[in-house]
Image (tube, rainbow, N blue to C red):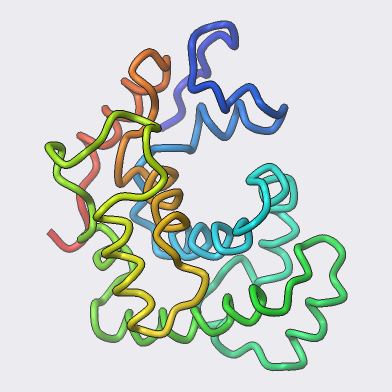
Length: 202
């Protein structure tokens, strides 16, 4: 469902005006619930790449990342080899960090294992959606008990670059929480999407 973007002059989360690329991302993606395994895996990977960097750096390169990593197709990525790592380290269109590149490939293999056990990545991730009573004020924290629990579970399963702060940013972006500030013009639409969303595995 496509909803017209509100007037740019209306109140929004303050970060949406920090870079030209942020407005459309904030208004059409951030905080809207996602149940598609490929999109969830992509975001897990991109949040890992963001570690130590700005989201703008990653967002402006997102299409390059998609091209370099086969659209974040889990089975395809799980078959990447050391040759692919070396190739990606020469790709100026992405962040050329060996550890993060290797983490994407390793995490794809761990994701395949998770899919065998759980049936879908979405069903696993949405298990960590916090109860409304457990939510802090919007954008008042950078980690939460839920993001810490998700991080610990993934790390136990062998995933890399999935720390609690990274997982909290992932949960904000993928709509597991509605972290738009109260006065943000997008908050109500994000909440409508969450109310209409069928939680995977339920």
